[in-house]
Length: 304
Image (cartoon, rainbow, N blue to C red; front, side):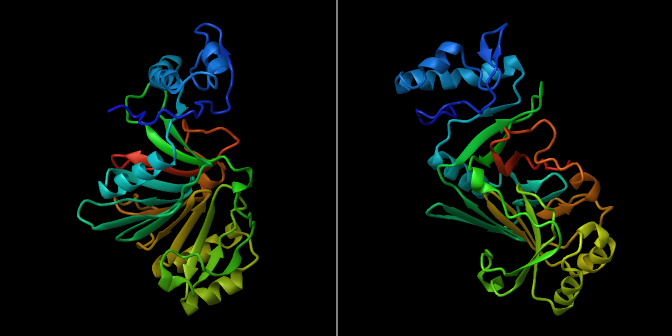
């Protein structure tokens, strides 16, 4: 079945508008000038036909990202099925500071939708996505690659950015915790100072509350070694937030020199964070979009 289940009026435009003079196609969406001009005046069958031409044209032009004609129903369906079928990895965050939600074949998973919200839980991780009319679905693939496309969910909201804390900050009790039993626990922002991702620690452990009280207001990199040496053995819940929602990871924190495990985990790597990349190389999205989450088929990962 074609991926184009709906003959929507939504435009393939991703905000990167430049005509390739040789082919006459837009380098952003792969439409012709006429298709762009006539888009709103033509019927659904016309738009459906154009949508189905775009994947081939995009490959011919070497376009590495394209918008998918997915409305909210399709996005909901994709998220639900991906978790139920354990067909890949959901990653949230930025390069170097992210969480990965990895359903394992042997583990039970729970996923449900409630209005605009999707919640999912597996052994070691939980996620919550909010899907509304501002969410866009993009397909990304490295140039000349035969690998399956990764699916990027992003928000177009200008106000979709997160509150930016540049130092370690106590955000108070985590009333938004997916785990209702943790809503009296405290949430500490590690202070990346970014609009696209917030990396936090959730805890009610007295030892960690005392530690964060000591380090609150400090730059994470000034106290990183001391903080990490105590966080790693205690392995508190890590919370990663984006424009799409949040992930909570409860697995043991891996040592810096350990390979990423084939189960849900987080990464917090200084030399990768320093590049301030919102997306992995080859998967950049337009500046007017806030990255929300990436789906990697077949257990690929964000940082490797």
